[in-house]
Image (tube, rainbow, N blue to C red):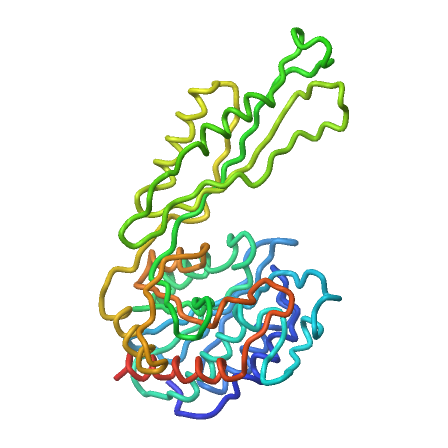
Length: 379
């Protein structure tokens, strides 16, 4: 572990934001991190996975070789900036205006990565080891990122004792919440086929649209559940219905729909798929369904690590954080299979929006909170 030194989290965030690393491009972001980490005593290993346009650059960096091993996980990839003309400042310029840093990725989550690196430099300790698992594939398919790096870590003796993911966790003010679990996510793609024909002769055609409508109605007619002790209710949302028929006098041959389910610990993806197929079968057996699961629901059990985070954050921000399981998925869904994991980062109010931004005061406060977490963990 390195001795205490100083890194400016604002300057490091700016350097990262200026890398236009829209998934899966890296654009130099991992080089910026490597240059910051190596002088602190980290051994940095680049781990690219995938081919062609799906090739993703990842970084594993570790300082120290002994236990306990504390891992910080995050991502340098960002979503596209969208309507750049609407931004107050160019999305990758990383400009400071009125005590606030603007730019894509400032809050989600380059600011947290910079704060953690600055915290490691500040907290310097001779005990244990600290690592960073940084991917460029969190905002994308998540096939060539954290999941594969974790497999590499296990094969090479780098499984951590605990992990902290730096996702933005608080809706309004820093320190408001930490994530100790997430709902699962699965996507269904439904195809109903018929027979194309003239609308004036429906008896010699077979319109698939009414069947598709009845199927979707059956899936959405009642709530999946009312929530559980630690999770909000599950929800099924139809995200698109597609026929692709430009003619008003033609019965189409095919209709498609896509839906997504965010599910709590009352379900598994397997139990939901069984329910979906049984529900559709009651309407009609004439359909095709494919299911893609991006993660099961999980909950980090109450124990020393989440309690440590809760206590330190309460001391730093004056009130204990909510132990939350809300929101979408994150790469914590992969890490939970290896060690206890929780998430704590910046405020989420502007993520994925025009004028994504973070107050400089929040970067400073998060850096100090991360440093305090490290000091407490290695005490």
